Image (tube, rainbow, N blue to C red; front, side, top):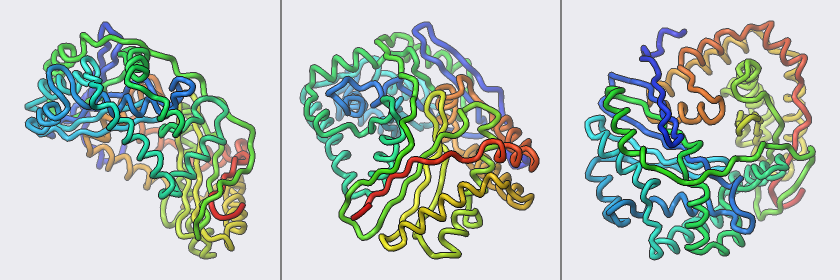
Length: 412
């Protein structure tokens, strides 16, 4: 374990009678506490014809709760110094909050009230839906995000292909009644996870969480298994002077030993300015203004997304060089590359471990994807345990598969 890792207390876990799982990483040197509430609904379980409902539910449930209307609810959070965030995704949505440990009990009660007693006031519905419509329309001015939405749509054959932004038709079809019914169907504690990290005593937090969330009830809908679509090449027409290139291919499942080996290899490919993609595609040939590849996961399945931004004239060569670098990984990595990759990953682990917000989010995500929380020591140990022989044996036996490719620009 690198010496820079802060000392850890034992991770605490709790499952309430209603099914909510709670996990807490003590960081006693901090006067603050961060919370991430992972909610078991997303675009993959949106009702057919109402694509985007999860996004509207997520926004609407934050507009008033318990005895407090929308403005009063926001003011109550501000009075406690709570900073909040979150978002809606394909398989889950999240609410996050950061606050002083001294106000943990009232802050957790306010966070819980948004799911245990949401107002879903009719007067707040249109603003919630319109915000989702604007987010969807903003993709027209965000070509990179638009590319990744199209790329994942082509990669998956299962409902994970649906964009978390929804569709224009789906959003327009929503009504206050349909969204309330959808929330009753999906906004429940079974499958939900509360990640906590920061200062505080576990006994006091356990009592506060139980009091705040213990009355939560509601339905849940299982997320369907992720299935991949056939590999192909696709193009999205867009008025642009640039061409966005996206690649997607399956990678080791989350939680497996192979995942850690692959993450080291991926760091060699695209972890820094000295990595292969940056060196070969940008530095040597000057083909792109941006190039990268990164690991993503849904329940039970890992995958990699690659990206390159270039011009129409250089797009074909850019794609050729990118694909060549993916194939070249099967030849193995050098000792120097391995050491640089491990150092980079361990540094990222250390920096993420300094943030209670990142830690709370990671713990919640771990329970979703791995079924259990991981300590920083465990993660670092896996990375440090990757040997040169091990990574090269893995790459030789598991060459990068042919990726699905999506381009976005003025021509294919």
